[in-house]
Length: 366
Image (cartoon, rainbow, N blue to C red; front, side, top):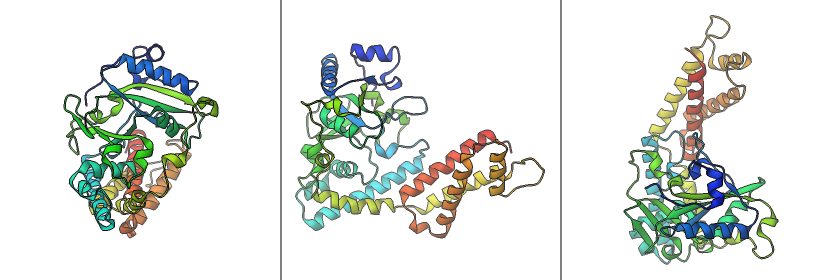
């Protein structure tokens, strides 16, 4: 997608200086009315864009310190092309199961769901079944603030403002900015209640799926206009602007939610046999690094003894001993019962073994 060319308010300008918005800290806002007035100024300064919002408990940043907003299918520090293709395979399988579930229940909108992948992806993304190339936004400031503060355990939360092309249809394609914007209220079947209560939109990079030159082109910090930090306090809302309660954002008696709970269970179990080999290879490299290190004597240690001795001598952080044993325990479970492993659990431990390897490669000289 194209990098946005934007104008910022005085508050944002004073905060970011010469940096990009994504690289700077968020502007602190005291209350909801102040936020609305600030966004009104931002909207006026950026007439070429339609403003969309995203509320989060945290400001997630990459290793370079920039706020980052990837569609769920592209998230992760160590993302190989094979892993991306695997995630798209899971998405394709979940899409088929979704269509089958709609057909068997004879739900309204089934025929259109069968024809249009964006409807399938929108439901799977919005109900958190599996990763998709789309990211959730809302056109409502109130919804974004409610999302940010609901379930928040910190003293503050964050609201992010994005500038996107104006929409013209239920599914708007903009080739100039390489973006597709999906208005969920117009495209989701009526049995999917959640999008209608959240004023939801889903946005993705047009024509970019499992092949891309740079992952950075998929990061929606390219469209970030401003980020605001709001207090986790009832004083933020005041008497005139009540928040939207959790039960309203996630309504009960939602037929599609019931379907998607079953689909998520199936999607989480999609683990390919080749992935097991990749994990065992990475684990073998970790053990080779450990065993190949002489610690305090000339004898060779078992991996468990070596990692314990290195922690004792202060060569590596003590926390790594626990990480090592946890990953080792998972490795044994994977070897003896690979069919019992979910894809989500596998991805977590695959990430951990790669992190272990990266840390040990820096501190150990074999």
